[in-house]
Image 1 (cartoon, helix red, strand yellow):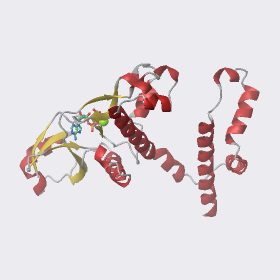
Image 2 (cartoon, protein in one colour):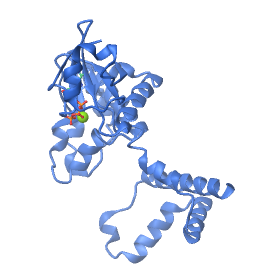
Image 3 (cartoon, helix red, strand yellow):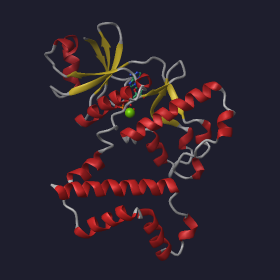
Image 4 (cartoon, helix red, strand yellow):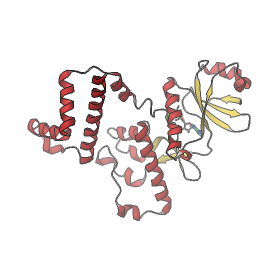
Length: 272
Ligand SMILES: Nc1ncnc2c1ncn2[C@@H]1O[C@H](COP(=O)(O)OP(=O)(O)OP(=O)(O)O)[C@@H](O)[C@H]1O
Ligand SMILES: [Mg+2]
C-alpha cells in the first residue's frame, strides 16, 4: 500500500516517490506511452532470465486505481498526478545513496577514436586491481543486456553524443548509477525491448516489397556478398574511399546477418 506520494527524487516530473506502508520507498514511473512501462517490465524480467537481475532495482507493476485499496491513503495526490485511471505504472525499490557512474578509464580515453568502444587487451586487463575487474564484468553484463534489449538510452546515447561532445565518455552515463557497495545499478530500462525493437517491428509490419529490392536482397543472401558488393561499389565510385577505410570484418558480418534476416522475412511474406 502506498502511504505517501511525493514529487522529486525520481526523475521526470510525471514520476513520483512513493512511501509504502511497510516503511520502504519506491520510485513510481508513469509512461507517457504504455510501451515504456512494458519495456521496463520485460527488460527487468529478461535480466532475470539472464541471471543478472541483481543489477536492477526490484520492480513490480501497479494499476492506477483512484478508488483502489492500494492507493487509498494518497487519493488526493493521485488525482493531482494526472495519471490516467487504469494505467499501469512501475515501482522500483528505492536504493539509497546512489552516485553517478563514468565509463571505465580505458574507454573514457577512447573518445577521440570514433564512435565505438575499443576492446581491452589482455595486458590492460592483467594490470587492473580486482575491484576494477569486478566492475568491468558488470559493464560487460550491461553492454550485453543493452544490446539484447536494443536499449539506446544508456551507452549508445553517450556514444552518439561523442560527435558534439568529445569528452562525453568521461561524463556520467545516463540511466546508470552506483550503489554504496560499488555495484552498478541499471536504472530505467524503459527503452528496452519494445521501443528499441520498433524498427524491427516496422519491418515485420511490412509484407509488400518492391520486386527489384526483394531480388537484390535474395542475391545478397544467396551469395553472402553484402559487404563485398558494398566494398566493390564504394571503391569504384568514390574517389576518396581509401581515406576512410571500410567496415571491419565484424561490421561486415553484422550487415550480412541483417540482410539474411530481411531475406527470411520476405520469404515468410511470400509463403503467406
Ligand atoms: N529505485 C530508485 N532508487 C533510487 N533512485 C532512483 C530510483 N529510480 C529513480 N531514481 C532516481 O531518479 C533518477 C531518474 O530515474 P529514471 O531514469 O528512472 O527516470 P526518468 O523519468 O527517465 O528521468 P531522467 O530523464 O532523469 O532519466 C535516477 O537517475 C535516480 O537518481
Ligand atoms: Mg531515465
